[in-house]
Amino acid sequence: MKLIKLSAIVLAVFTVILTIVFFTWWAFKDEAVFGSEKFDQTRWMELSSSVQKDCRRGDMAYDLKNHILIRGAKKEAVMALLGRPSLEDANALEYDLGKCMHVYHALRIYFDADARLTHSQISSH
Image (cartoon, rainbow, N blue to C red):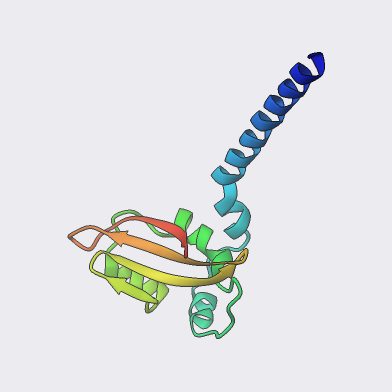
């Protein structure tokens, strides 16, 4: 009976620790995966036409999302900075980042009705 109680406690502690580790990783995953390189417009443009499927622009995406793209910026200014998007719809632009950590990622930039930047995110698909 004591062995069952002890193993239940060990399992509960392990589960709590695993949960904490997972949510910590989840909170900081973009920085860990995409946070190593500063945005370079020339390199960004060069890599847009690359046939490589690896994480060709992913390293710049985190810096771009958090330090370069400013809320309220006009859509035209964003397109002048980043070039032609991979996909475009009425309220968003999407730039392909390549295959990062075995998953294809993109930088999605969202705009309001006045074509002003509202937010951006790194998405996987």
